[in-house]
Image 1 (tube, rainbow, N blue to C red):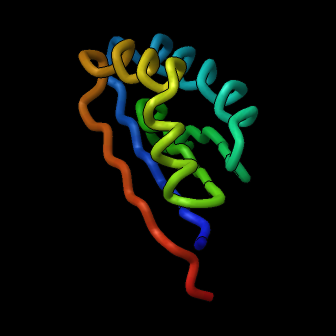
Image 2: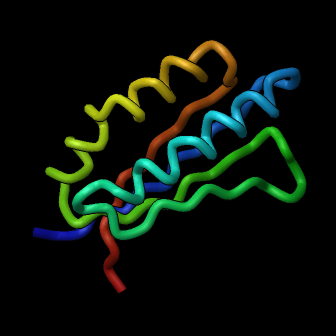
Image 3: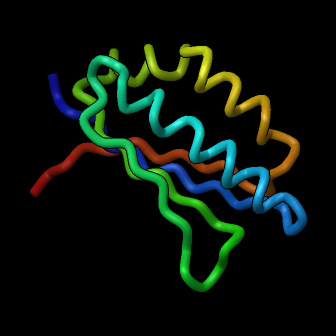
Length: 96
């Protein structure tokens, strides 16, 4: 099976940056412990502190699917869904 790489961009509403950041930070540790998680990092843009970017690498699509059904992932989504302007997820494969 091929690795799956994900770039997920989250743009917090202006008055929700601290809340969204705390929620995003809380999912990182739990996700690292999942079977099939090879990398799970959270970043914040220098020039726009409202924007957070997750860089993820998973062993397979099956691992991604399992992650998307975990309690901590679903809790994160429910915590931030009304506090963000954008939640954009891109799945990709490394080619070079």
